[in-house]
Image (cartoon, rainbow, N blue to C red; front, side, top):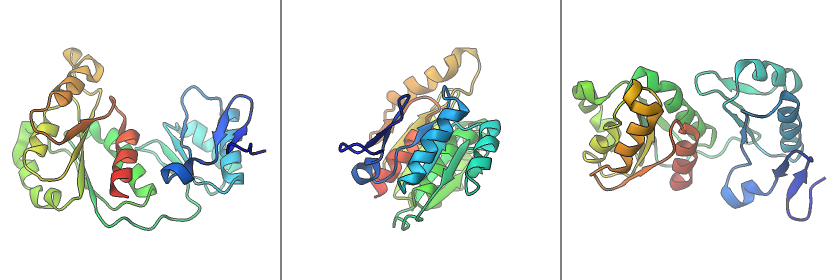
Length: 222
């Protein structure tokens, strides 16, 4: 039952059915901390109310369980995203480049890239072009410069975002990752580097938050 204020009260969750009208995309389900039964009930209500379904940080076992209940559910295993899109959004005019520093950063980069694609954005993936071999980045510079905006995903010291920003005219959304050795402090060093970027035009999302970067980039691109 949808309330007059536009949400379904399930007791353990209040599903925001009006989110798409306000934000352009339905409420997204963050899976960790929820039981499979809770995920199923939330997803059922989203689908029943003719909304798009997107589940983030969905592990394979939970996906297998939900797939039996919702046969149309698709899964991106690298990004850990499950989704059912009722009506494919019209493609946005500008492409978004998603760049990551190392192979270990790909899962977070894929979360951003897949989120963008699910929301109807064309994506250019440019992976493993970190500052330890900057010639790899320079080789892709022409493609990057054509993007309307750029997401940069990096762990270790997180220097890639500032470097990319200094080479292009587009805005940069930086995503620090938890990849790195002890003094990386599970992504804190990359986060602080990105927050202190000397190149203007860089905004930073939380550590490992590829979804947040993809969502924000889609809002800008829309």
